[in-house]
Image 1 (cartoon, rainbow, N blue to C red):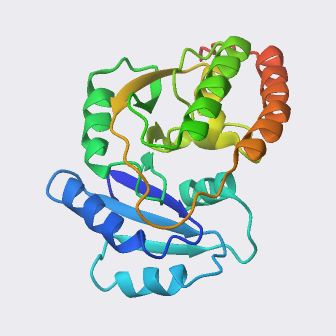
Image 2 (image 1 turned 30 degrees about the vertical axis):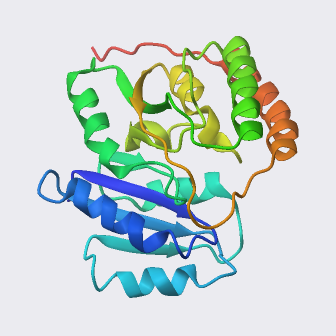
Amino acid sequence: MPQLSVVVPVFNERDNIPPLLAEIAAALRGKVDFEIVYVDDDSSDDSRAILQAQKASYPELRVLHHVTRSGQSTAVWNGVHAAHSPWVATLDGDGQNDPADIPKLLAARDTAGRNVKLLAGWRTTRRDSFNKRISSKIANAVRSRMLRDATPDTGCGLKLFEREVFLRLPYFDHMHRYLPALVKRAGFDSQSVPVGHRPRTAGKSKYGMLDRLWVGIADLRGVAWLMRRAKVTRVQEL
């Protein structure tokens, strides 16, 4: 059984797959036993064929494929379900997250309290367009005020969490953006860890500003309702 599963959701990221795989392997080989679980969200390019070909170079690689396009949260959810390790790291398939930061999250986990079940990447320096940075800043401020999740950057795809805790969380589309609040709702703690961020060098962004705005408003209301209805009770066996 590997010690770490790295889950990477992708949709039409053919040019980012080979370099990102090489970086994940360079960051983790010789440091931790790991597997890489790519989840292709029914890409319309040849991402799936490229992933299949890469398995010859990376024995750690497993490839899952959505028969119908289902979105990033579902890709992450299915990847975590398929993972063989008790701890899972996620990162975006566009290459903007640096796999070299994964050991930093592992080190933070090893020194954190036992109740910390989520280590969330914090992109202290964003390498995105002006509009994307502004929309994320506004969304983070509104989310933090409504949910009080004490997390400066929930949109970072680079995260490390305990698989068992993740699978206990309520599933819904876009849930990957609210993991700190959902983990808090389940009675556990999160810790933010500063990580790097890089500009996209290939492919196109899958989200627009209006997409994030309208979907985010509906999601925030739903997550706020879940937080209000949460009840965590400590249990002792006699």
